[in-house]
Length: 114
Image (cartoon, rainbow, N blue to C red; front, side, top):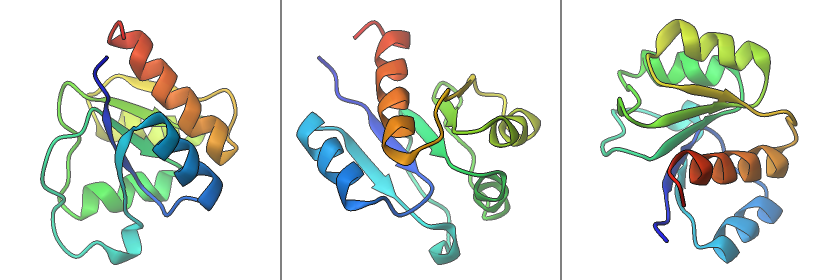
């Protein structure tokens, strides 16, 4: 089974990091207040926790890889993603951090027949 690599727009809690490590999911977590240059590389999925995270990502000159999925943890975040990106956007039914990350991983696996 292919393991995806995700871009996550904030620093995660220890519990969420531990879950991702147990699942052997590769990811980069990057709080936007620390972005000073473009984030190079393509990711299988982009997880955004807020509209401001999406705006910061775009303002810093970044774009999600065209074939990658974008995951938003609330409707307002999804609206921001639809406004700025052409990617397919999924909105999590639960906005709590670990649940959102789990939803994103499982949804990515469904979309990619994993």
